[in-house]
Length: 195
Image (cartoon, rainbow, N blue to C red; front, side):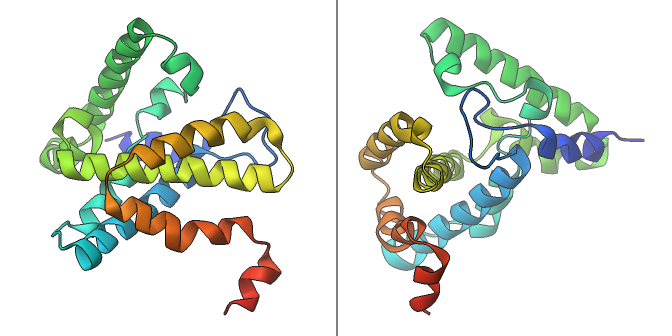
């Protein structure tokens, strides 16, 4: 018997942005789905517009599991996680232990398949960077949605994430921002007018 999927089912119980007021709460499971969709899109964009040969399906799958260890650790807020190098290093150790614990729950016959999905150090470095970009984009989109709803609590996070996205050298990220992000500033009627 394996408790792996019973643990994964708890992703919906882990709330993101726990130190901030949220107009709409977001859990790790729904965040992971959005990151998977954006990671897939970044790979497709990169392949079609910039001549790469990335596996979009693998990128999406890696993104689905990118925060799975938070089932065991919870979502540590960014200001805490990156407060100083010592805390960041210790948290990385905790994440690695949680990732290993999840892999231990996988039946032996499937461990080689799940290892690069669950263990950050075993993931394909190119796809891992792409998923990190998708994760940053999704955090930025969350900020835009909260600010659009009148929640100024996300202003500082928005500024920080904008700087990170500007510094990102992946042209697929800029393409995504230029083509898809403006719609997040619109209401439903405005989006539907464009159809």
